[in-house]
Amino acid sequence: MKISEEIQNLIPYSPGKPIDETKRELGLNRVYKLASNENPLGPSSKVLEAIGAELTELHRYPDAGFYELRQAHTKKFGFAPEWFTFGNGSNEIIDLLIRVFCAPGESVLTSANAFVAYGICTKAARANFLETPMAEDMKFDLKAMKQIYDDAKSNQPVRLIFIANPNNPTGTYVGKAELDEFLDSMRGETETLIILDEAYLEFVDADDYPDSLQYVKDFKNVMVTRTMSKVHGLAGLRVGSLIGHPEFIDLIDRVRNPFNVNNLAQRAAIVALDDEEYLKRVREVNTSGRDYFYAEFEKLGIKFWKSQANFVLIEPQSDGRALFNSLLKLGVIVRPVPLRKDKTFLRISIGTKEENEACVAALTELRDAL
Ligand SMILES: Cc1ncc(COP(=O)(O)O)c(C=O)c1O
Image 1: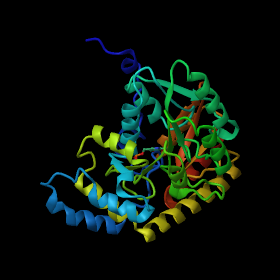
Image 2: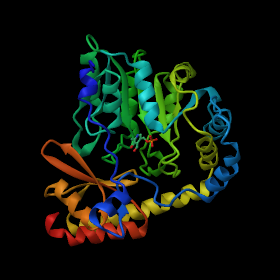
Image 3: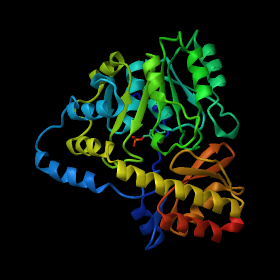
């Protein structure tokens, strides 16, 4: 069978190594997973209760029109219901955006070292994938992106620009002044959508972080993706959202599988959205874990990047792959990220106090290999 080159060359998404697999392979009893930026606290009790009540409805198809889920978002964010749609995680939304708005031969633009799904979904859609190198300090270089955008215009027009803010795996962010300037420079570009991917928004505490929803109001071609997988603790249920102009939301709704978000996930998301007490606790655990990591990494002389998310990127002086394997043997799973051809970095998710301490203890034991 003839298979397209793009599909043949596709490097699949590599998920964090599972705990059970690591236990089995290495004969360990206790394993800590700090590899997938998951919420370490488990789902909130309110969510568990709501899902329990929904179980008797499992013989029904989910609400394909997301009536209640849209209402809950309207109440929370102030846009009319037709400004929202939802996906099986925001990963599905990324995939849908590319399938709907970018034809084969057209281009998707983002930065190198951004969230890996942008590249995978673009290649799967047989579109061109353009990346600019990161600026210093592992940040998106919006000026370079504008330059590439302008250069590509005549032959492979860019249809979608993805800006992960904060970015995974670097934890860095784009501030308001920079984003204002970039969006202003794109004001006339009505054939291109700019997607602000805010999977980690709720962990941000930077003063100059921009208000993305104001951009959605000001620019028809700016859309925002969010997820319930991180601060809301629903990674296993798969709910992501897209906020943007109804004309574009409608196009996504035509293409998406009508039952892409199941009953339990929709119910859980409605409850999780407003569970302020739980969200506050998650943020507190994350902030104290982040500060603990910074202090310990400094003591150990590890180079790291300040993060606005629920993980911290470190640059080992030695081989990151070897360090990843040594940490595994000590029962700590982190994520190796080959950000440079010659260098693997490690992304460490922030966990509970116990998990963070186990990670620091393992790093301390491996001090000579850092
Ligand atoms: C920047 C970014 N965007 C989107 C996602 C997708 O999340 P989900 O599909 O669980 O909503 C992730 C997941 O790690 C991410 O890091």
